[in-house]
Amino acid sequence: MRQAQSRLGNKWVQIAKLLPGRGLWAAKKRWYNTLRRPNRVGSASSENACERTDSKLAALPAGGCSSRGPGEAVSHKRMEPELEALRLGELKCNLDCKAAELECKVRVIACKEEQLLLKEKTVQAQNKLLREKNEELRKMAGEVQQLNEALEYEYQEKGFQIRATNSLQTKVDELASLALAAGADAETIRAIKLRPL
Image (cartoon, rainbow, N blue to C red; front, top):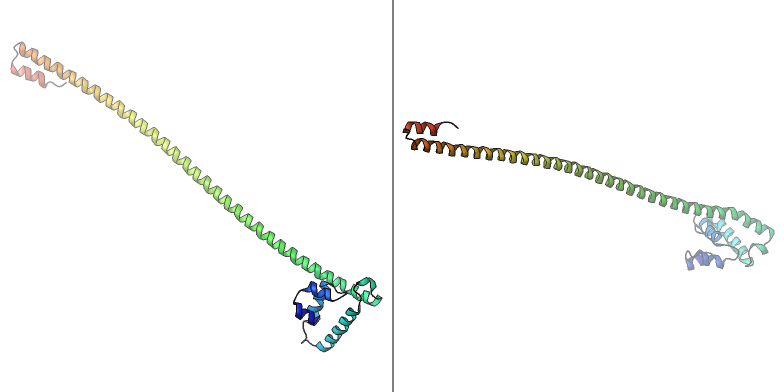
């Protein structure tokens, strides 16, 4: 197993094919639990045990569990729960990763929803401001129209007064000329002209 690992690296599928009766997970577990650490306590005895186990496995036929003896089938059955636990651990890790990924996506969606709500509130506030400004403009337009009407009325009144004054002045001038024609003296004519209208 050490030779295969040094030659192939961590290609466990190919290493498991070289070890009859040992699957991918079993080969991987065997490597990481025993063979990878030669310097730990009791390494000589563990290496001997590993060599013995490897020689037993090499002696097994390639058919797998069906052609094993009763003792070997039991040892394989003992390893099945451990392999199942490893598989379950890997599945749990994958599920945890997916759950964390989904949680991140949910948070991103929540942030985007908050941004959309803020934009909607901003648009509503701007629309309210525009409505208020339009209302003010309508009020100002009404006031301007009222001022225009007042100015026009005042202009008409002043024009009427000016026309009336001109008409009176014309009549005073006519009266003064008649008085002059009738032979009135200068003081009487002056008094007629200076008389308030």
